[in-house]
Image: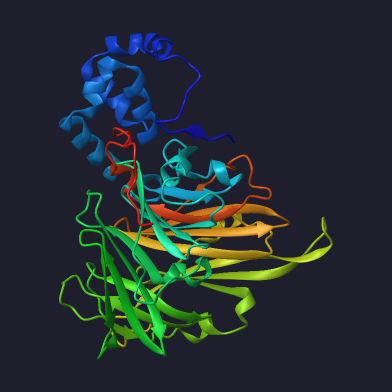
Length: 421
């Protein structure tokens, strides 16, 4: 399936032709026009705004933006309300992020190579780490540094080295980092990651407002595990079912704590090959698989047989089973694979799990969500092929529920980008 360009790219159709085609739309009653526009994805809205001057003022108005944000938040807190963002480099000069939008069921292309160019030298090996609002964070392997892209300002800049010094892409672990817009809706952010330093858990935090890092040693939590929904959970280290979790409270002066939650015997038993453990935002997913014979390739492959979601127990702080994905949903995405990894995130009571697998060079994506507010409802959104998954040079994936609230994406482009030399 081909992806659709995001606003800001060149379109072969003249704007005048597009505006003429939208002419009948302008004759509709305002209530119906609002209803139609509210159903569009952000990239589609921006394209309409760029070619239809009469609609530009309506789409850019504060009232419409407020209605769109409310509609986006209430359209379903499952996968449909979030974006699946994938970074690919094929070829490197055309580096772009592919964004899958649940309501439209389509992929959109978000060009970033031109924005990155002033801050990243040609041939640099980039890896996409995280996204929040208008901020997209990359790790540069050659220079061993972090680069942030601000889509609103269409600018990129390099972050100062962390207290651990320069780091290559292999040093960043997905389960141990998080990017947060701070305050929400702004282009400022906090980047947090947890690591074991000399076998001691530490929390590292970068604030874009001050352009500085802070390093804090975590202390062992006493009694039960922290349970504040406003805090941040990061996995400082993990080997199979064994992990070290670091919790940072919402207060600026809260000292981080760590604990070592244990799984029930059934979830931690067996070899690591048939149980994939995925951590994120205070939850854990255990993906159960079985080895089978693949008649096509005459090799042994794996298939998913079950997915379990765990949370922290109120007493003791260990992992306890929250829910299992229904068998009929598992059958829907039960495909052979050779290797698999995952991404787990939670926002506003919705846990989102993305499983990325590869079989004979072809990538496959599975997107699940668990809605606590709707009585523990599981949802699976089939992700269509993005047209070149075979041999794809995948270089990072993220889920963002704040991307639809990004407004406006097509800000006036700046002729220069900040960055350290």
